[in-house]
Image 1 (cartoon, helix red, strand yellow):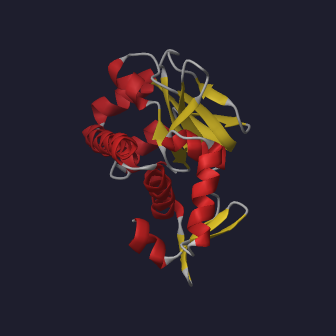
Image 2 (image 1 turned 30 degrees about the horizontal axis):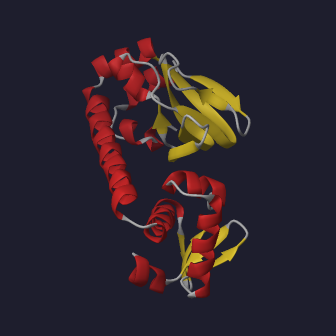
Length: 219
């Protein structure tokens, strides 16, 4: 299980065995708060099963979705590294099983396994680049471009190549997509319908098929 997590992929078997013995496991129902913004950061989490979203809330209570994490991803490591409170809220979007690694075990592992430290730096750099891209998209792209970027990111991370395009089996709700691109649910609905009318994609409930022309026209 740990080998499937990017930061532990190159770690020696003995170090992983020692690390796995320190993990605590927790099952969380859908729509459960894993931790809140400004909570003390005393553990990191590995998703064994399920999915979570990372969110902030505006003064009016509007939800802003920063990203999603899925099976094999980890989160919560920043507070372990800088000893600061949590920077965002993490909420399960489906029933999830999490492995929890407390601060003392995490620090001890880093001291004995510099490979993990290097992998964490690489992953943090990747996430920072992704955050920069999102900020740039919000500033420079219109709402059609922002919705298209969300769909292309979903296709890249969990899409399946089929005859006629790329299948996304479980797209976020229109409200969640609106929270990701800083617009209204009604606007997202209008954009998706427009893409469908133009033959760029097909929607069937939660499933979406992106046709090759989608990438040519809006990619």
